[in-house]
Amino acid sequence: MMRTTVKRRLSGVLLLVAAVATLFWGHRQLVPVMRHLAYLSGWLLLAVCLFLTAYNARKKLPFLPLGSSRTWLQLHAYVGYFSLALFFAHTGWRWPTGVFEAALASLYLAVAASGVAGLVWSRIVPRRLTARGCEALYERIPAIRRKLAEDAEAMALASVAATRSTAVADFYKVHLAGFFRRPMNGWRHLAEVRSPRMRIEARIADLDRFLDPDQRKVLKELAVLVAQKDSLDYQRSLQLSLKLWLFVHIPLTYSLLILTALHVVLVFAFSGGTEAN
Image (cartoon, rainbow, N blue to C red; front, side, top):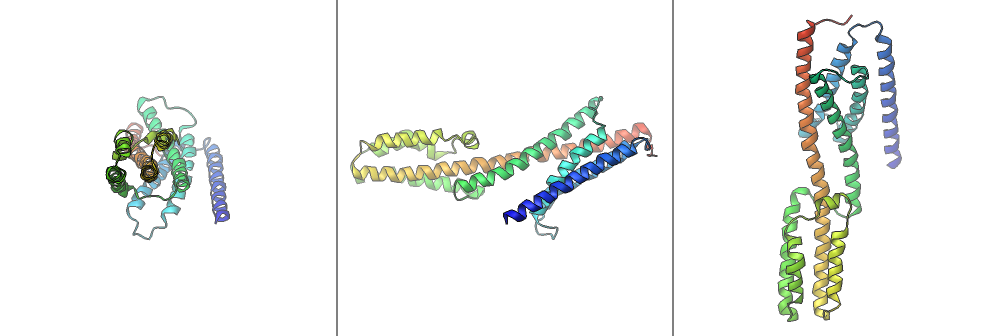
């Protein structure tokens, strides 16, 4: 399986390199003989952008026999990289001087940058989630968190009667109640910072030294719930980051299409619809 994946990616990279090389070679050959080559490259760039946008529509129509989502994602990535080369060919490797054209170019590069960042992150997140254990569905995380909080509170309250001491219950109220009540350490989980959990574990270890066997048993069970809650927060942070990325990339993409359509109108309005020779 790994070997097949490597071969597929290598084939894709080689095809991408060949396509980019062909594009630059053809563009160089046509520059002296085609006065309005920018029209051709512009229409081609628009077609490529529309194809890239179609991937989002494909995800919303999974029941249609249009190929697997995995295949579409790979095409989306490689065609996206090709669009970068096409963009630079279209602009002639020069930054636009007009305000509108500069804004359009900036928006395109923002879309491209967010796309590359999202592609890289979408491949990192599953590996990190797998390394930390089972993955929970994002929609189920709030319910699982509530259940953990209820179990932890019930366990702490029951310890008062079972051990005839409020030590564990007091510890829960001061150090754990807030931790179980809401998502914690979002940015720290993204950065793989584990110090918050280590601080809680250190406090549990400090308390453990002063407890009797029955109290230690309850505290140990609470420690298990702490680990589960921390893992749940970790999963929530990583999955939420992917969802938030879409709220950046997709609006930028549609904004780009709107400005591109306006760009086409302005070009033909001021050029009189000049045809390429």
